[in-house]
Length: 223
Image (cartoon, rainbow, N blue to C red; front, side, top):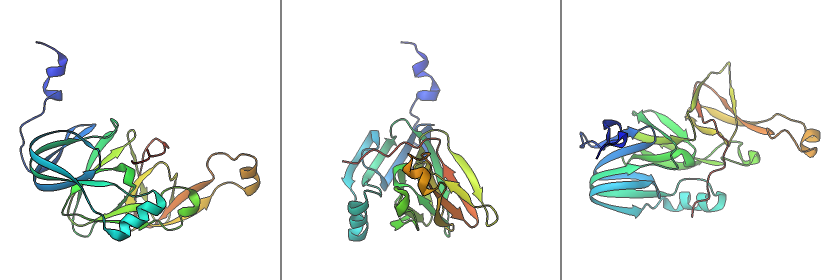
């Protein structure tokens, strides 16, 4: 049997080391020896002796997610084997974090991460009135995070002299050292006339970076 489908580009390779790697631009492979964390429903294939369980996020995080609809429903893959994660054929990226790093990520953009990383749901200052992104996921510690983006992302530097304004439906995440506020970019009169569709933006101040995806699609409601 012959086909371009069987080229090396699409073939699953033997595991080289424990941890995550890009299978290709739209899937992450994780070699598990112990456990890893991932968004619920993200597994598309696995082989080996693995079990998948819902991960408890603690009472505080559970209540925040129940009230706001934000956050990240998690599962744990336990055992030894290989698992492939993907979500709606979105673009995948891996970020290496070291001690002292902090990263704030929209829950809809988290695919998987090492169990060595600390994780909590945190209120985004001032974002409630913008109608989205009130609570995001903050990671810290040493390990790797697999992210998804609806299209090729844009990474924009932020400085104290040049704050960045981002749509709350398009923001993927930002370095945790940045502070946030809300900007209203149109008058109340304009809003009452129907508005431009760009009434509020999240403003990020300080020194760091912000990641934006070229899509303002609303996240799917988690079951």
